[in-house]
Length: 164
Image (cartoon, rainbow, N blue to C red):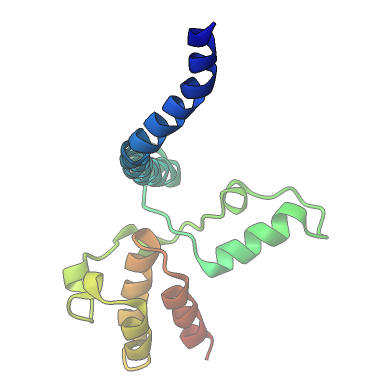
């Protein structure tokens, strides 16, 4: 009987003490697993983005044809054509939001752009320098930006400069 009482009293105390001793190690192990899971998740998302861009590029170049790009005008056309009041069925290009543009067939390399080290420049620096460039240089930057980073600040400023 004395053993039963001892186990009933000291059993929970023993469990509490062991839990308190092992808890920091368990928390550290859980943190390490979370860090690893976050890392793997970031890798998976990055790979997914690469795969989606590749698929979108493949859809934009049927049968190895000319490259395509999404322009602000094409986006407006696709929005209006998709649910607009005209009632017409949208064309294939309007549905995809892609405009076939002969000038877009050649997307310049970053080294060919008017701004040196363009690929490493933050958007704020690029936007500040766009007004000083010729329209042809801005067009090349737009083609590069639309096919690579898709920064809305840069593309928006290019559209604003084109309209003015």
